[in-house]
Image 1 (cartoon, rainbow, N blue to C red):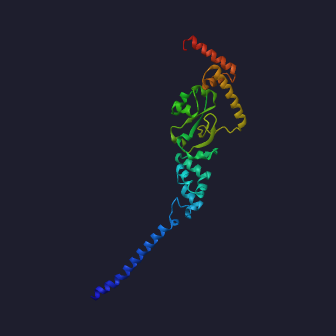
Image 2: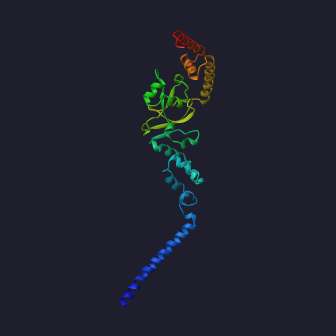
Image 3: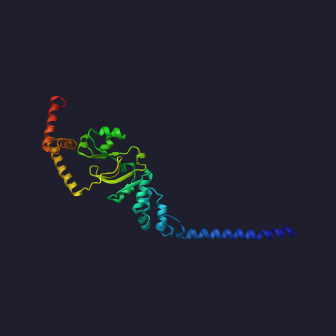
Length: 265
């Protein structure tokens, strides 16, 4: 009997200790459930850790471009961190393992999509190039080249200094440097990869370029109406005539007469 009493007395502190632990856990759970500021959650921007910009950078830099866009909607602190240019550029580069992105887009929304369609290779047009030959060279579809460059016909290649080529193999971007450019013909901002070096760094006057393009546009429209052809054909005959509209019409008339004589029309 005395042995049983001693055993009971020896176990009593352990029972009390377990009861105390259970009471502590119960009270802690009650505190967490009743005080939402202690819960780490993206929806709880008042939590100290999630309001610290330095800590947020460490966390948010692991997110994708899409998730960053969502995180920017949580609160002002999150938006200010996500909107930092370096944060956006790193997220834009990460999936493609780019070495560097040079330039700043006109609109910050450019960084919100980093799909492969956002990139292109710059090809300087050389004598003998055709859309079909470039499609074979770069392993892409003819229609994809024409769609990216806003070309209505194959003749459009002759009035341009370069073409943007869609990227078919993403591995070409690894350790590459892309330049953010607003392409005049494509009418969009593109991350351009130059396989043969860097882009032309000669200073250009945007106003003069716009003025000359507007004048050229008026000439092409006039030729298109006179010859009753599409834009690409008008640009082609203007280019082979060194920009002389009268010579362009003469060249077109000569080709049209030859086609009639040979029975092609």
